[in-house]
Image (cartoon, rainbow, N blue to C red; front, side, top):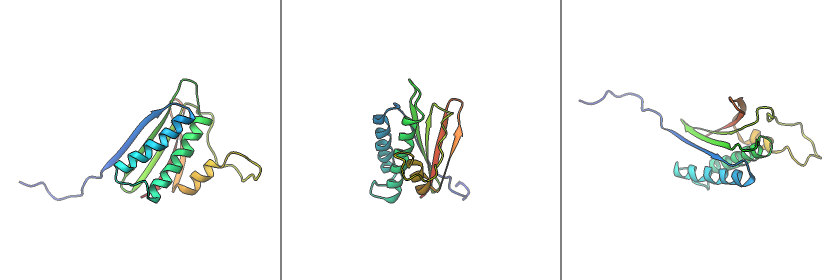
Length: 140
């Protein structure tokens, strides 16, 4: 007896890893994100991989720079479901919420979220029990 034909269940791919809240941890997060994408069949030479690399680099750098709490790691989570790739970076500080700043020609910092805003189809911030999660989504 065969099973009735119906919609094929969607394949969900997820990667979750904690990293030390250091510049080294942020670099490692980007590297491992690209390695995981390659394992999912998204080679490093693609536009999607390049965009994910930018998003992870910026969000992880923000978590390390602005969201760092002593003795707490930050967490990277990537989820691929039905053509949408979601990148989430969680840190231990709820009080420092990211926002795209008005354009300031003299500013030396603050351009990272402009990159996230330009690259991602959508992004936002949600509170956690401890800290916050900044997420960004890309279409595949």
